[in-house]
Amino acid sequence: MPESWLPAFVVAAKSVGLNYAFLLNAFEREAWLKGVVVSVELSFLSIASSLLVGLVIATALTSERPWLARPARAFVEIIRNTPTLVQIFCAFFVLNMLVSQALGGPQNNPLTAYAWVVIVLSLHFGAYHAEALRAGIEAVPKGMRESAASLGFSRRGRLIHVELPLAFRFAWPSLINNMVDLVKATSLGSAIAVGEVTYASLMIWVNGDNVLELMIFIFLVYAALTLFVVWLGGWVEKRLRMPGYGH
Image 1 (cartoon, rainbow, N blue to C red):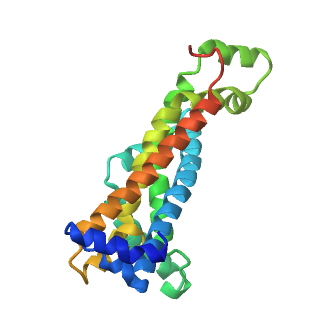
Image 2 (cartoon, helix red, strand yellow; image 1 turned 90 degrees about the vertical axis):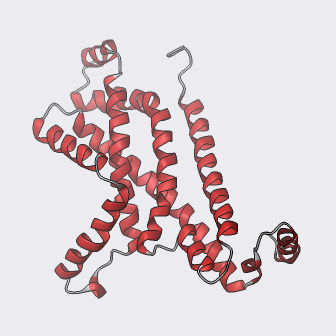
């Protein structure tokens, strides 16, 4: 919003009982906008890395080698059956401390709270992505696998050139749902003082009587982010659609 509009917006909001005076404070306004940027960064960085994690785990889950499939299954079950917030706390307060001790002190530890949130969200939602992709791989018609094998494709070749391209198409709606949940889960970063939009808003309303006003802004930010993810996912789904297949 252009700065020249801010006083008029604040006055108009005040007339209906909403206190947005923090927008006139340059420090608080910039801190809040930086929080929005951090939330966007967290969302899309975690989405990209979680898809990569999901792909790796799904490949292990569908492997014919038990030493790959069984640990992958155990990882998925552990991740899915523990709360995301608890995982963030364990990572930041336990694993981070162990890393710091191993490296000779916190000053040598390159992993920040921001990095731990990305790591935990990537692993957590990567497990959900993996299950969706596993179901997609198993949904590939047997005839297609046999045709690929008859053409001389190895197990790895069938996976890369036949099964995964189809699995992504089958699993994409579920992956979009997981990504929407991931965007909303970035707000958990506020629990370990990551400066995303929820934490920035909390720091502002601690000093002012404007909890309702900032909660409205938070809702709008996350609504915009999730709607964009849904729109982008729908666009990708249409681009991936194969004419005449599945209709």
